[in-house]
Length: 209
Image (tube, rainbow, N blue to C red):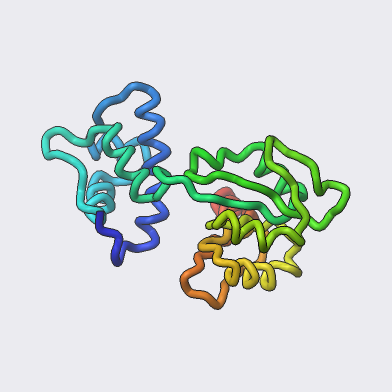
């Protein structure tokens, strides 16, 4: 499947496609047209065809899309058909909530461990995930070839920790520190999550002129 020169806008729509296709699959729907899928997702049929054509195109004219096949192909594009290793740094409110409630497996990740500096929680096991001391982090990441680190640590430590993780060979960082992070290594991807951006977008949409 072609991935070169695919815009970030298209890439960011892929998880939404997978979510809708998975729901159709779970409901026993076997095929769907681009028009019907577009109506459900709030897109246009033309937009859907253009997006999938970035990766070779998967539909058949006059038939539409086989839901199960397209679901698997989108999963392969995103990479969730493979398992990626991950750890969490910081077991405060957000870190703990992610461990307890987020479905990492469904998104293609295996959460291996969490790390924290608080000696009162080091040694705890939360939903089968051990909380380890930060002193053990470097060796653990190297030994387990950890691909992704999830940052839920105080903002003051975000930049230095991200660079440290990059030096350890981590490929991606999921950043909840409310700091817009970048790392020096261009091969490391950082996904910055800002809850406030989403809330302010909602604020704009509900505000009167």
